Image (tube, rainbow, N blue to C red; front, side, top):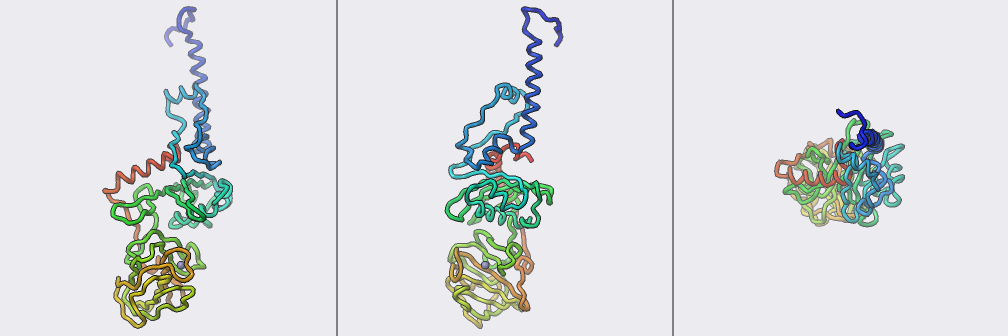
Amino acid sequence: MRNDKYRPNSPPYLLYGLLGVSLGMNIILAVKLGSDDAPSADVAAVEVESIEVAAVEPAPVDEVALAAAETVEPIAPSVTAVPEGYHLVHGTIDHSLARTFKAELDEDADAIAAVYSRLFMWDLDLRRDVQKGDEVWAIYKVNGAGDVEIPAAWYESGKLGRTLKAYEYRADGDTFASYWFDDGTEVPYRLVAGPLQDYEQITSLLRDRPTHEGMDFKTPVGTPVVTPKSGTVTRVNWNHAANGNCVEVRYADGTLAKFLHLDKLAVQAGQHVTSSQVLADSGNTGTSTAPHLHYQLDRSGKTVDPLDYHDTLRRRLDDDDGERFAQTRVRYDAMLGEEVAAR
Ligand SMILES: [Zn+2]
């Protein structure tokens, strides 16, 4: 200020100066508030109560803070409407993932925690690798008992030292949506030349549920099931009450492969099969609550993890998907708050 001499008829510079200081203090306060509790005090409050952001009135904003926000950096992330029926949850882990969801959600906490941990099971064992202070974010929708949809989820992992960000997205040419990380890498691994060309989701892994001896692929009834390797069909439809229609193939290397809960079989016992030959249509027979294929491998009486036995790959989105996937990400990131998105 060049004119430092107070004159009655000139603008009240001293007052402006004081206001300026006050503004500055407000900015500092607002920034502090924002950084203490990501994504922001406003969004965090919404998340803790787990109510739709769309239904929440924006919190009253101090006019001075608003003026400051306009002239300096935007402080509060803009809260973008979450689509009808979807909710946000955000929590910090104190003990376990299950307890974190229970603390944040009144209903469906277990079902949401189950879908959430299945999503990240490829990179983290969410029983062992969870650390106090890790943070979880998810957009979710409950369609019915135990039927939970999570179109976007993040996990900030102390162990990994980074935040895993997963988005549901159907890649160009795919029948089903899958989950993809923000860098365009697919979240779930795939078996190279596995028993199904196309499936909705892998819903169970050996490493995820050691008491269950196979890998489960969620897929509609009627999906062709092929033998990944050449071999001989050793038996069909044994233990029918539990397995439903089923096929067992002894691969040339001696490994026994079991394909359970099938619909119509295309092979019979004693038949030789060559790799990628169709064995059956997938189904929902035996003790199966939803259409899926159970694929199990045994060698010398011991269960083998298909992920160890087969080559695996992680696909990457190609350029055709670039823009559409970016739009998907931006939309979900906006729902979770810009400040969080910037992490
Ligand atoms: Zn199974």
